[in-house]
Length: 331
Image (cartoon, rainbow, N blue to C red; front, side, top):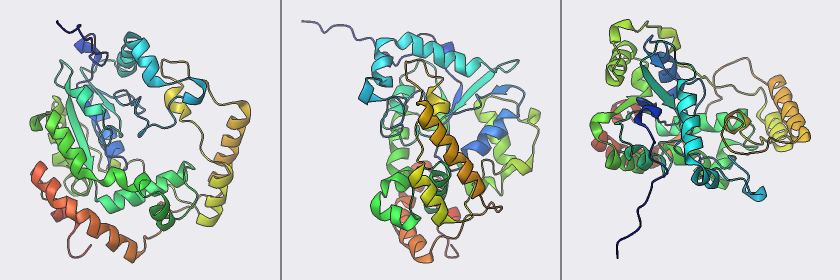
């Protein structure tokens, strides 16, 4: 007996609905800088916000997408009407296109998602991927301060490492992530950017990236001051910020799924009011410096020892000497 034909809803109905390249992560590893760098090229267009299409139903990456408690699930809605989602994705990618001939997108959760790369790999179009990597301990620490800024944590970094280590460490575990990526996408379609090298080799990397996505490197206006985009915002008082975050925690990721093509109700007026109060209080507690308070030396040594074991593996997989940037004796 023959098996029934299976129609994969994650296959794009038309190849022209897909981007030419994707900036796929890691979060807090320089993706915003790469986005701004490529966006300046006259032949390249990238939507301003992250899209999160290929992992929109991944509850590990997006626990605040949808609301299963009231029957709203992006994964269920996608299976019901995949064409509607694909049309939304294609429209999102090309809304800002004028004369640009090369279209990309930026979704920092794809690298750590368990579903994104298999879906990208199945497409008829050979999408190229740009993956940003950063010293894993420092990436995790930056991730923590991002969680503070967005009111998703109400404790110190060391306490979070004790209570919920995966929330900040998981996205720094590059070994399995990179292995899964390259098991599904050919190496020649992946460009790895090491954030620390971007700071010292900006111009050459910028030109290589343009050539990688198919754009003329000579048409890119260079602007060295944009090397570090999306810099962190830090509180004047961590104690005060923890109190604010405990009383006014972040709710839904309204800026993302308010635009998604499924019936996801927006937060109530009371929830929105609490969110505005949390934002206002956080702004009042904002420090004038853009430098994070130092991590304790003992914590950094502890995490470096853990991540350095993965570093050699990732170096071998990518053919990039990451120790040269991350775990030198002076670190």
